[in-house]
Every structure is written in structure tokens, then in C-alpha cells.
View 1 (cartoon, helix red, strand yellow):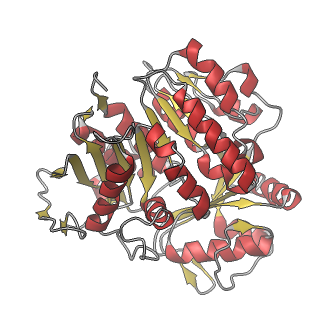
View 2 (spheres, rainbow, N blue to C red):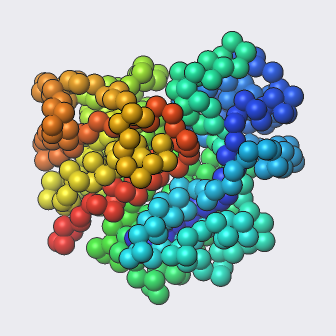
Length: 428
């Protein structure tokens, strides 16, 4: 779930990536009515939840409670023609992305089985205590924009993720991570995998969250800690992450539009009455929620919090929000993240203009909670900056890949690239 720039973290697994529709067909399932299940208990729950999110073109992640059924599905998926195996888990993905820079060394503390170990970059180091005999598998069911199944037609390309992952959920590598810090001496810590605790009991969730906070407090002062959020359904757990000192203990957050709205709904923030985004998330609403997080839970003269940075990413645009005086190079960081989104989705080295489209709003309000200003995006200067009560916002459109090769891990790659270009002020 943690990782470093010289990095470290504690959620790691093998992603098995394949066509969602083809796998469900191979399982003998037929397209019925979509229904969201917060936890998957059966193949039928999987089929209904997949349909629910494919119909919206939205990404989601769920825990599969039945071990035997999950392993049966995982075996079929892993052996399916065309199935691909990749490094998985937010932590491992961010570490793998950063390790692509030869000057960086990454320490990965997560449950690392033989297949995952084989897939990791040479610059990713795994402590012996993190090695285990079997891999944790996450199944990534992808679908393309316009793909049809029965009456269903996906409005966007996206993926649905599910697993029966108890090692990451129990944060089993947390102690290994803490004990590795002194020797590794990281410049950055990346923490992820909190969403995996949804498969645990409330008592264990509470216990492990407190241990996470204690572990973060053991990290030497001056080392930034980035928390990468992921899809969640448990409002109580999300509220605990916000309120039980996790947010004030970290320096930076990375999250997408679903996680942002769910966070606001769980902690009674701005626009929390909104049930879901309608199309491209409204920039002013997103800006209001980001402002609220940093104002209510970020660093201020009256609050002992380390949180000073949020990197928000959605398909059409990104926003980097920072508390003034703590970060530099935000323009390059948010632009680099947007460039990464376009190139990685299309699997190209540079942006290919014929394969991308612009879906971001050409003009928008910077707020709906107060009298925000109207911004008109200038194509010659696409990164837009505005300020609100000591917080700076940097917005950039994304050149969206029309025919994405792979959407898995895109958010992690975006966050990693943004972190790579971000500069923490020395007095931090």
C-alpha cells in the first residue's frame, strides 16, 4: 500500500486484463438488468454490477466475498485467449511508472508473488518479507466505447475490477513498510490500498486505520506522503479515512471524479446531494469540493495538518489544487499528467493528433458555492490558473484517446507523472 520516489507502499497484485463481455459469456452469463452490489457474493452479482457500470461507462472496483467462486472465475480468466497479465495494485503501478526513470529507485512493500515479481521493473526492490508463494489476482474486465451486449451499449471505454484480495485488504505489509523506512531513506512515500479494507470487518478497519496513521507519523518530518484513493462503496470507511486523522497525516491526494463525489457524500461536503455526475463533471463543482477538502482538512494557521495538495483527474480534464507556499511547478505537473493520459491510453510515445479528441469544456465557472469567475480556455495557453483564499488551482484539458488500448492503471500513471514534476518547497 505504500511506495516511494525512492518509494514504497503496500498494495500490489497481478492484474488479469481481458474483455468483460467475453469473460461473462464464457461463464455462461446473459445480459439482464444492471444492479449495483457493494460486495459481490456470486456470479449473478458480478453480471448485474458489471452491466450497471458498463451502461454508465464508469469505472468501479468491488470485493468478491466467495473465495472458491472467485478462484474458479480467476482461473478461467487467466487462461482465457487474449488475457494479459500486468503489474497491478495502485502502489505497484505508481512504483513501476516511477521506476521507468533510471535515476529513481523504488521500494515496494506489498504481497509479491512469483508472477508479480517477474513483471516488476529492475529498479523496483522488494524486501524478502514481502515475498509470498502465491500471487493476489485482480480481474480487470474492459469494454470499449460503443461496445454492445444484449440491449446494453457502453457510452465510454472503461473497466470493472474485482478481487478476493485479503492480503492487501488486511494491510499485511504495513509493518514491513515501517521497518524498511530507516534503511531505505525515501524522498517520497506513496500510500494506497485503503479501499481494499472494504472486505474487512468494521473492527479490523478501525484498528488498521489507526495503525496506518501511527505508521505515517513515524515517517521522518519533511518526507511528503501521497495517498492514492480508489473506488469505494463504504461511506463509513471513507468518512473514517477523512476524519480519523488519515487526511491530515498525508501531504498529497490523488483521486478521480467518482472518488471525489463519494468523498463529499460520505463527509457531508459541497454538492453531496448530487447522486452522480452527468457526463463530464462540472468544473465549478469539482473546484468547490477540492477547495472544501483543503479548507476543512488541509494545512492552515489554525490546523495541524500536512495536507497541501490534491491531484484530481477525470477523462476530459485534470485539476491540481495546492495550498499556497508549499508546492511549485504545478503548471508542468498538471500538464505532464494530462500528456501521460493521452499517450498511455493510446500506447504511443507522443500525442498523435489523429487519435485524440478534446472533450473538456471550452468555458466554465470556477465555483458554484460562491461568485466564481468565468474562464474561457485559450488553446494557445491551455493550463488555466485561478486562486481562492490561499489555494491555487491549475486546470488543463486532456487530449482523450479515441481508441484506448488499455485504461487500467491510467489514474496511477497520471498521479505518478504529476508527482514526478511536482516540487515541494524546502521549508515544507
